[in-house]
Amino acid sequence: MLQTFLGFDPSKAILACLVTAGLLWLLQPVAYRLGLLDHPVGRKDHAEPTPVTGGLAIFFGCAVLFFWSRSSSPALHSLLAASVLLVAMGIYDDLRDLRWYWRILGQAVAALLVIYWGGVRVEQIGPVFGLSHLSLGWLSVPFTVFATIGIINAMNMIDGADGLCGLLGLAALVMLAAASIYAGNDMLANRLSVLCGALAGFLAWNMRLPWRPRAKVFLGNAGSALLGLAIAWVSFRLTQNKGHPVNPVLALWLLPIPVMDCLVLIVRRLQEGRSPFSAGRDHIHHIMQDAGFGPTRAALHLTWVSLLCGLVVGQAMRLDVPNPHLLLAFLALCVGWYLLTRDRARAVAFFRRFRRASSPHVVPPPVSSPMRDFD
Image (cartoon, rainbow, N blue to C red; front, side, top):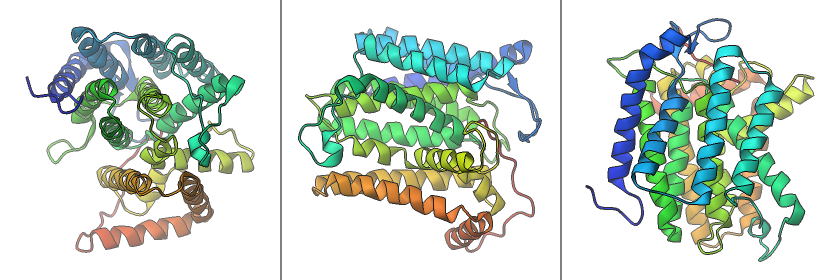
């Protein structure tokens, strides 16, 4: 067994990766038999029907490792129970196309399980505004439910290209693990080693590689919901633990791309008189596609930007930059993205310049690689 590094256990990460990757291989014929597939119709222009068993495999990969290591606490039990609900609902959604309000209801119930069973909730937001104490009081439960639903749907909306949601989720979990280690929260870092390993096992099947021109499996609605729930659960435990406090502002900057993209799209769709959950090719990865990025390059670029944001803000907190300033910086990022994307041609031109600057010797292909959109 590999030595545990300040709570983060590489051996558990490797085992979770192998278990999840193996489950995905075993689930492929089951997916075809049950019709648990994402078909290339409408906006979904991938080459052929693809299994959407990523969420199911990640859940079982994590559960096996948690039970094998005898990890036990009300907080973990509540996460597993809420995950069962979201995975079951996501599988049904992938099979039967569940209406958006039923999905929101299920996500709210999952959040309530975490709150009342596990005792995981947002209670103190004073540090966000530079105050030593500002309790939400009776607003704690609705705020936690709202935040959980928001993160779940942000991950669902960003799941539109091979490797994108998984890489951004893995980047967030790795940074949360680093924050846990820095705060001395060894138990949470240990749990994150399992989550990171399971997600890496999924990415082994989901990423496009030189010898594999397309993804062999997708997260599906079950997977994106599970990933969003896990990130929310970890963030709440990390920022609300009195013994290991981490400022809540940091959580925003560990998941900047999905949250920014989700908030701006909600505002824009409401302005257009559309449902925030309506379909459209107006996500950041679609704009990058129009600018000539393939799914792998888009996912990798957005991932390093996400990691850079987390690193810079983490260092800014160590240097005692006022937390309200960091919150205002995130709001400015969202406003800037909103203004840039008001004119799609301008946004596409921006990413074309970025592509040329990042790869000056690469000639773009004449046709963009196909991408997907799940929201």
